[in-house]
Length: 204
Image (tube, rainbow, N blue to C red; front, side):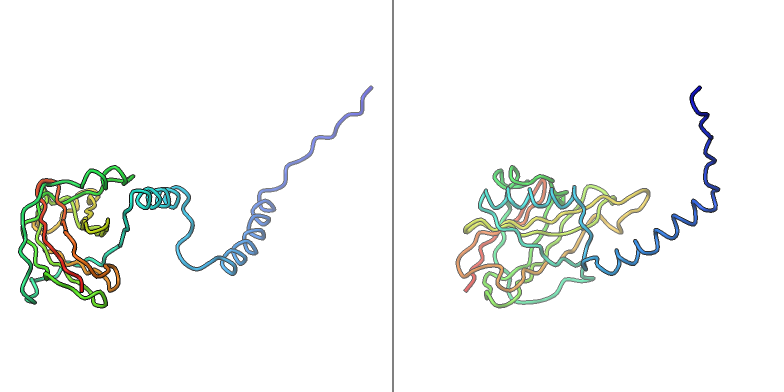
């Protein structure tokens, strides 16, 4: 007859819990001690961002992230460049190059920006835009440079739940950092989904 196998008794739960705790202590210490500073690697987000950057570069675009704020009042400054209405929506080539479509403001109502700038100084741009409702707020702004064409893209984000923005009319200030634009003449377009604005900028 085959030998009778003795049934093994499971470990008591207190020993299982103690083993897990003892393993977590050195794991946590090693993770905190050797982890690189900065944001953790997020595979989906990071790989998508890398793919988006490669597509933009392949199409000849340089992307520049801008500092965007919502000032309480418009800031008086140097005389502004003449501004003209432009067709709404992203330029077709840029639209095809982006993986994630930005949530654009509905209309760009007005723009205050100088007609000339120095490549070594910040270039501020103030504008008013409207949204179709109060369920969106400014998330970020990006500048896309393609030769002599510059496209400024405000990107809004939807508010969660019952949160509402104070107004669908927004005063926004963005600042192009020094060195972002080389000396030359540029056609700048500030994009809204229905109505954009455009002006000419000389960097010298």
